[in-house]
Amino acid sequence: MNSAPVPDASDAPVVVTVVGIGADGWGGLTDASRDVLRAAGVVVGGPRQLALLPPECVGERVPWPSPLRPAVPGLVAAHRDRGLAVLASGDPLFHGIGRTLVDVLGADAVRVLPHPSSVSYACARLGWAVEDTVVVTVVGRPTARLAAALHDGRRVLVLSAGSATPAEVAALLRARGFGPSRLRVLEQLGGARERSREGTADTWDGVSEGAASEGAGAGAGAGSGASGPVDPLNVVAVDCRRAPDALRLGAVPGLPDAAYEHDGQLTKRHVRAATLAALAPAPGELLWDVGGGSGSIAVEWLRTHPSCRAVSVERDPERAARIARNADALGVPGLDVVTGAAPAALDGLPTPDAVFVGGGLTAPGLLDACWAALPEGGRLVANTVTLESEALLADWYRRHGGELVRLAVAHAVPVGGFTGWRQAMPVTQWSAVRGPHAVGDGRGAGAGAGVAAGAGGGDRAAGAAVGEGTGGGATP
Image 1 (cartoon, rainbow, N blue to C red):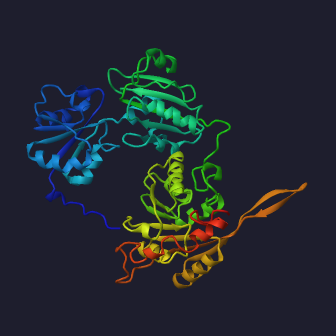
Image 2: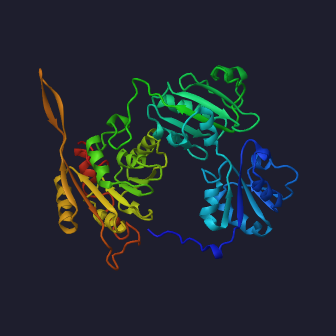
Image 3: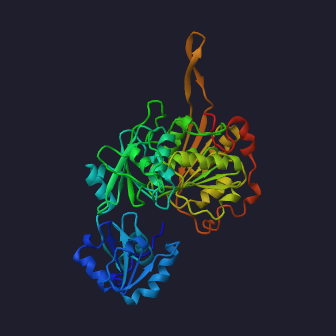
């Protein structure tokens, strides 16, 4: 895919200097950072950061508006000739404003003077190796993201959104079977008011803003000395411990079927693992999951890497809502769920790197629309359990090559006093990689253009009786 051109350094002088600042305020800054802030005609930052500046910083103080990102070009244009500095918390390029400024202005226009991040401080206090610590931010993001990082024995740092975050983290841990996990809340790291408190998710009493002092003391660890409400500036450290009876979720595709809420429209775990292997997700890539069913393919695509993206297209509103719930429960709330019938519902979606078709294969124009939407090198994988759709996939295999395989899974079950095999319905899977596009093939004009008449037709409804429907290969 095309990427934005990198500005030439000679044409892009530094427009803004971003200064990282910690809870230790002015006293914790380097001389270089202090010099920038003294000389700045305008300093932009959050109210908390701006309040840390001494009177000797005489520049105009401008708080960030909300929403922040759309305001960046206007703020920069208004103040760039006055000596513009931006205050950021800790390391500006670690989940900070520095990334937004670089995205908008280009790397050559932004100078960054970092301060130790809250992660560095937290790991120093805990004796954790930074490189072995998982970091999840819930600042401006759902707490549900944490679920994808939960594995027995892992150490996780949660960058909090505020005073309520520790209680929300504890509640999520309990709900996901990690109630025995040890929690330590580190407040005002690096500042004069630094303190900590600890407990377990099972016993955490909901200490948050406005809580009584005795409530905070009950959750505090020995020697922590913490009391009163949790400071909004905090990091939550989690030593993950899975409860003995909790469902084990691995780090690779093929999660247990019991991990999903479903109505039978679920690509079963062995077929799901084979399907994700054929889709071959890579960091930053986008999947279309067409005929989402329970959303399992899209969910496990997203779990392979935090930067992966996915759109699940499902025509049934009840199933679409279920997909969103499964995404939240399994730690990928960023899944974009589109309620509508394909191929019409594909119009206007961003270009995919891979497409999975789990239902509605015989809907007129569906495969054509998915194939046309792929860039060169994009992958298409389609599963079916019906003879009609199998014939269609055989024809596409003849015309476009790729791989056509049949996946058969049998489970051992009691047969009287003995044990025998129970065969699930075999799944036919076609996978292929898109070659170069011919001139005038219509790519980019809208994936569903000209084929909306076929939306919702074909084997999508008929297949529901045999476990295909909108879930795609659901019964095997």
